Amino acid sequence: MADFGEILRNIGEFGLFQKITLFVLCFPNLILPFHFASVFFTQSDPERHCNTDWILRADPNLTAGEQLNLTLPREEDGAFSKCRMFVPVDWGIDAIREYGLNVTTGCQNGWVYSNTLYEATIVTDFDLVCDQANLLEVAQTLLMAGILIGCLLFGPFAESFGRKRAAQIPVFVMLIFTVTTGLCPNFYLYLASQFMVGIGYGGYRLNGVILATEWIGVSRRSWGACVTQLFGAVGQIVLAGMIYFIRDWRLAQLVTAAPHVVIAIYIWFIPESARWLLDRGRTEEAKQLITKVAAINKRTVPESLLEKIVEKETEKKRGIKILIQSSVLRKYFFTVIFAWFSLNIAYYCLSFNVGNFGLDIFLTQLVFGLTELPAHILCIWLLEALGRKISLMATLLIGGFSCLLILAVQGNAVAVTALVTTGRFFINWAGSVCNVYVQELFPTSFRQTASGLGSIASRAGGLLSPLVNMLAMYHWSIPTIVLSSLTMISGALCFLLPETRRKELPDSTDEAEDNG
Image (cartoon, rainbow, N blue to C red; front, top):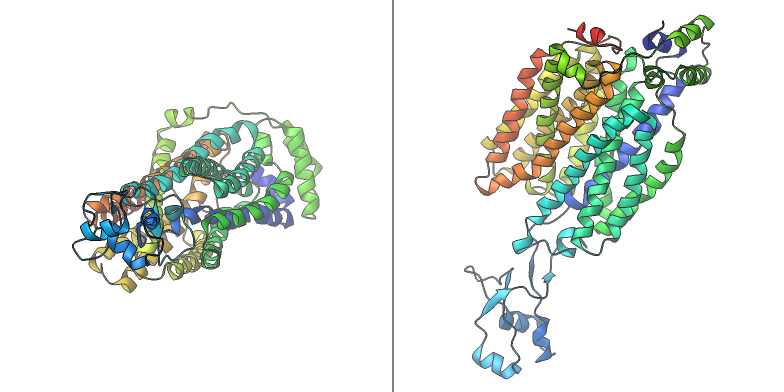
């Protein structure tokens, strides 16, 4: 009976087929960061005042200054109120000037915005200001909730229906609801569309990397996760440029949808994972696919190997029972998902605050993307040179400590941005390691479920990140302390994990336990 590592050594561990498959599965990750444009690039407290055009009925020739003086109260600092106005009256203009207005109310007819960095954002289009200001965090949270649900749905789906379908369907979900997001007439439909986009995002990020990795041999296995992350970093850079030139969030949504059309066409032709087919007992389909891959890689499959493939029988599926029955794998699982959870809280807490570090938001986003590129390139090399365990421990500890140092330099925009960028650099690196690690620790029959549950934990971290940021209302340092502490604690706990460098992916529980 041939194991899949032997099959890959014969048909090519990283030949033309794997390179093409890796590229087409990674390319969507260049577009995925664009889905965060509407919640990243906003002004939470834009310059504004209540719309008081009602007074123009009394005198349409009022200047802008007179209109504001007559209809808006002033704050203690002498500036016009951003959230209050005088109650409209049915008086003539002379009476209003003589007696003045004294009774105030909240803005009744929306706001007038000025000196904004963008042409339109969800804040200005949906008036997420004053008593509605916290709805921006609601939008961020709901997008992250959709990503979590996507992992929850498409993880088990891939185990039953295959990696291929579980990667294709999310692309179509993202395409449809990216368009509807850009066309939403109100905030509640926007939330619903973004939630569905998040489901597609989570489903694709989970299954695209698994499908790519299961076709790659042991010598290049880390490429599956690291190149996926690398494309995401390039997407972060392109995102900064796109929003710099397209400062209307609705147009940005439609621009994001355009490449999804191309992806939705070619994604239909990607191959299934032969490893999954063999694990499901569909050996004839697997044999035909392996033969085609060998031909693309200009290799010949030995007839004796094909006979061994046919002889392989389906192993008993235990799914989640593996964790219940194996204390070793349970220890590995909870250690990895806690690391993934912690680093995602840190990553998204920093990302959602991109406009609050004191430097130009476009420059900050560009720097974020540029520093992620070397993180993922280095990850490919150092995962093989140093191994998975040391890489994960070091990146989490250094990333968390860098974020903790922010407390010492608060108020210095350059120093804060430098430390945030350093922290994100190592946290991104740790994310790539987790993507590789979670696939190497668990057997084939549980690999997708483990990756799915790990992704759910990581997305739960992303889901909680806007709420962690809201703790700043009690003290500005609380979010930084929380994200730094979690990251460093999870880094220390990774000492419990085994090293999996240059080992074949385990196909059974016994092989997975023997990794230790």
